[in-house]
Image (tube, rainbow over all chains, first blue to last red; front, side):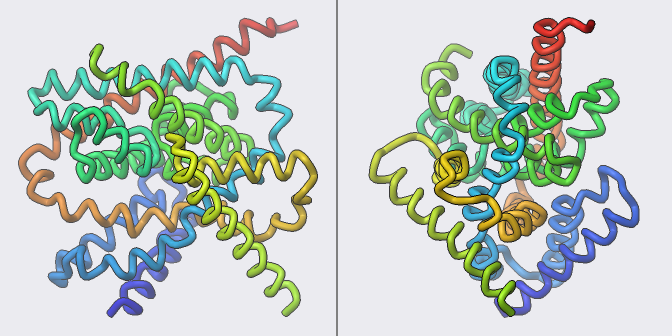
Length: 223
Length: 122
């Protein structure tokens, strides 16, 4: 069955890509439509996530190398990154603190438990950092991973159109914001928007994950 | 045929770099994900000229273009949270959306403002 799940996932992804090219809209973002379609198929066919895990492990084997490969757009856009290093550094640092603080405060305001608040704090960064950082501050790692996925898809789908509504046309700042709040998933969309957006988003997701790992243990108790 | 072998060699190189990064991160106990460590390492290799970018351009370009694909199988894992989504899904969605929007606007706004301020229009 593993082969069937892999073929299904690739077929759904290719279809979703064609759909996004044919009907360009935030709602046709391939990560979003593919994930939704596969979940619907599995729920309808009574397939559990456990059955899909061997296929998942094979398909995600290249996720690490693919993230490493983001160094190439970074390299090609090194001039603009160096030129705007300070605004980028401040933007990512303050943006990361704002997204952590607002996640915790909104969770508290909605009356969610402290375990959920701690898992929410790490939602903007890439999964390996989120899992470890959540455990340190008393959050549930599995729940943190689910929030990371949701934040990533949200950023990929709604990040670019919201920035457009906000009249943010500067490609550098667009990429920076998407990478900071929605890690690799947002970056996968930023890469498609343009080379500068992709490069800056890659740098931002890497940097945001490092900042989060460093500040969260003392920043979270202050909130 | 030659191109295909070259392409696969590039993917193998990136995979090896990632695996080495994973070892390095766990050995050195640094709080950085292996993928980010590998990204920085590859950037340094490119900057130093040790790895010319034409050696990895097609493989890296392919992975960059399809980066989203690799997240799909992981995101499907959200289906395991059906119960939580039914009970608190809407509130959790508003929390994640609200906080993401705040982070998005502050990051973009600050980066743009600081750039414009530093370099006033002629």
